[in-house]
Length: 143
Image (cartoon, rainbow, N blue to C red; front, side, top):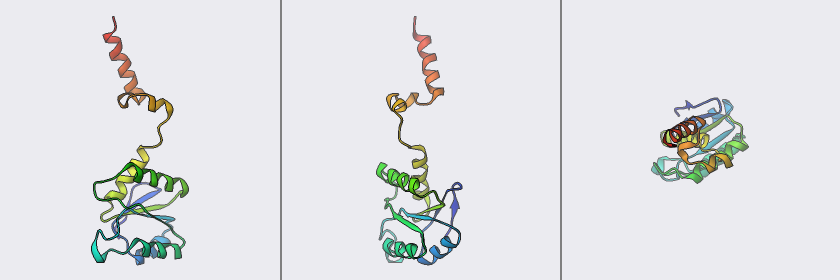
């Protein structure tokens, strides 16, 4: 288990085993999120149900959000956002290398629900700095 801390709330890891969950419980992890589909790593990969049962016996919440490599979908991000809203942390996400777990988390942080004001503006103009630039350009073009 190779844990990389992303921030105070979230860390990522490569594939976990049931024994790894003992160490995570001892370190205060409250939620483990599995981003790896069952069978992706062959017979050597523990089944999600096995890990979920072990986590439950240790008092750790466990969630399964299977993401195929390079195929993160909006629903994966939304599922993680919902879990993070329910569990303040600390949280550990894992997959084969930790990359998918980190990428979904980064998208969850940056793809929060859009406000009505943000949703009404084109993507190029959603920050105040970009909106100011757009108004400046428009003023140059106006007679």
